Length: 286
Image (tube, rainbow, N blue to C red; front, side):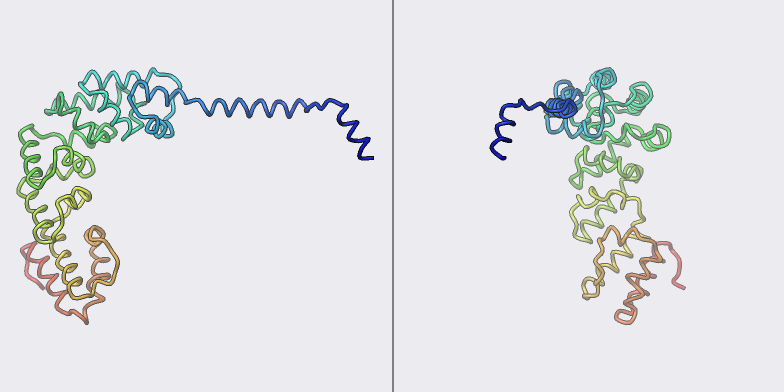
């Protein structure tokens, strides 16, 4: 039986159904297509100077099949003095900019930044360090926060540079927290000086957490840091929480988590904390 069946199968040519053939053909075509780089990847490598790995990363976040918009974006940057390498860095940091509207998004903001003193290499360095500036609202973000004279900007840059910050460092912090450049030079020195000299941090701590610069040094940071140091030095800091969280939680949460639980062990802590806060506001402790 099996012998005759084998002979029959060997004599008959085997044909695959048309459906199966179409499936195999489709799968083969898909595999071939997937092995070829997409238009976006090729463009990003050849026109923007990205590495294949970076181009793939960017193409997973934005996709385009023609060069019209990307070409227009690159032309805007080149016309404002950006180098090829700077353009590559910008697109890698903020992929969406490759499809931004030159007329509505890029040109108005670049024009405004030039009007307040950023031109040539300074403008290119600013955007390269913090491309998110171009994603912010001109009316709500840029105009309120960049409306300072060039000399004022330079004084702020100088204040931060005394603590080891580069201009790029300062601009990155500014983009995350515009208040960084609204502070007076005296407040900048006092704020960083407190964290470095009294808390023992590197100045880069505030570079990583620039939002802390918007808090009041005397009314919030100093009193809460005093509590933090007191609890830590007496072995009472049992809650695992970072200093940034301790400084940014609400007053009610701070009292409930860090003062009330230790009233019996350190009864003096609440009075000292209240005294520090009232000293900052110039009022008497009730």
